[in-house]
Amino acid sequence: MNARSIRKAATILFLLVWRLPSQQNPPGPSRLEFDVAVINPANENKIGAGAISSSQVSKDRLELRGFTVKAMVKMAYRLQDYQIIGGPKWFDNDTYDVDAKSAPGGTQQQIPQKLQSLLADRFQLVLRRETRTLPAYALGPVKSGSKLKEAGPGAPPGGFGWGPRMIRSKGATMHDFAERLADALQHPVLDQTGLSGIYEIDLKFAPVEPNPSDTDRGPSIFQALQEQLGLKLDTAKGPVEVMVVDRLERPSAN
Picture 1 (cartoon, helix red, strand yellow):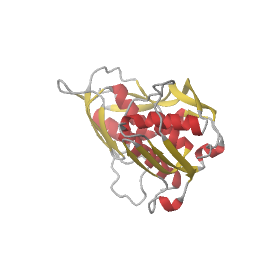
Picture 2: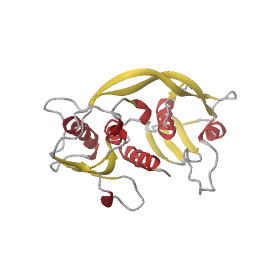
Picture 3: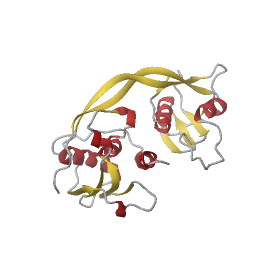
Picture 4: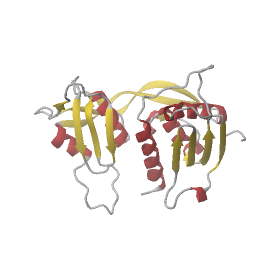
């Protein structure tokens, strides 16, 4: 696994922890921010053996090791690579260590918004939200129809468990499922199933980026969708929400 793949895996792991809707930090008195933040060029000696980057999160602390600013933006706004447009070359090359702390009493759910403030204050980051027409996959039923099972009464929609080999949910809309597929594929996925219910999902597949030494690969995610859920992914183009980097500077002094 190359350095970019390992860094991507670390970012995906962070997203697995948060699983929150993307929220922007409001301006003014309600703005959430860290009380103290120290940013330095990455020190490889602070990262675990064999890793390119690492993160530790608690209610009042965020510790990042070996993270690019682009990886921080992805964490703060819950974005994928294809949703970030622009930025200088160092945006996705230079790596930093971040130690940020807040006064006791905060929550882990507030950390992404505090990271947004840190990026704005220390890196002068300015983002602009746009909708662009991009290559995508269209999620739809196969000719014989889907094999989806409707969730039981009272099943809460939106809860997912997922990893390199599976996506599971006891109650998911197709819109939310399409978003999880996009996370796995690192490519936009549009819900064109025409299905408006809430369904159980149990999808098992080979890793999208398999380890060459892994002999137990299983079906591809495309094959698994057809065989297990009666769904398919076709190439298409469609509207995708992106963030355009309008301004970015190297971090201000500690």
